Amino acid sequence: MLLTIERVAIMKSVDIFAATPDHILASVARIVEEVEVAAGESLLREGEPGDCLYIVVEGELRAHSQSRTLMILTPGKIVGELALLDPEPRSASVDAVSDALLFRIDKEPFDEVMADRPEIALGVIRSLARRIRQQGRVIAGTSDPESSRGDR
Image 1 (cartoon, helix red, strand yellow):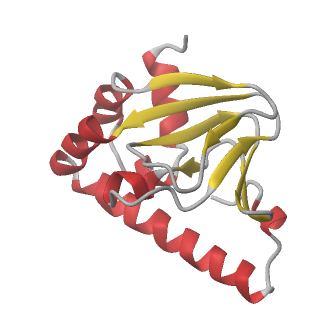
Image 2 (image 1 turned 135 degrees about the horizontal axis):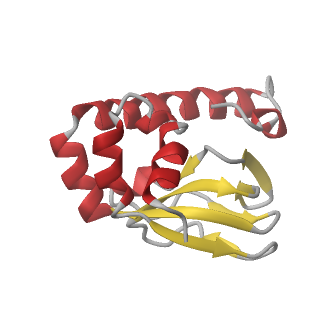
Image 3 (image 1 turned 45 degrees about the vertical axis):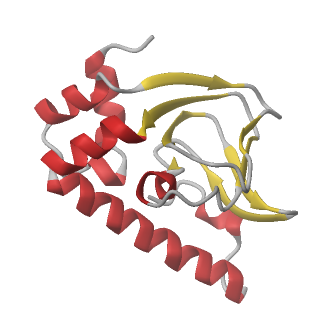
């Protein structure tokens, strides 16, 4: 189990939290649940309801729809943020490529944090805009999903 200060340092490296002061991230760190996923395990299934987001701390995951890879998720990436904003079913499946450590943040406490801290809401919007652009490039064939490794 990571210390609060370690959780804050990890979250600070994630786009949606980059503009958030450390003392606020310390309170967010208290709502984080650490989740371990073994290589080959499924984290999310396309079509299932979602009520949380995950931050990749260690390891690598693959987001895919049917057999098409949409994105490779590496440390510092987030997945599932759409489920926090829109109650629609998951738009993709996510499987662990390697053993992974993730932070899980559930919808209800995250809603409270976003209401109190507009910089987090803006971070979510910026993150989604980048992801939409990346997916547009993948669909257009001008970018390989593998090339998004480490891109924050």
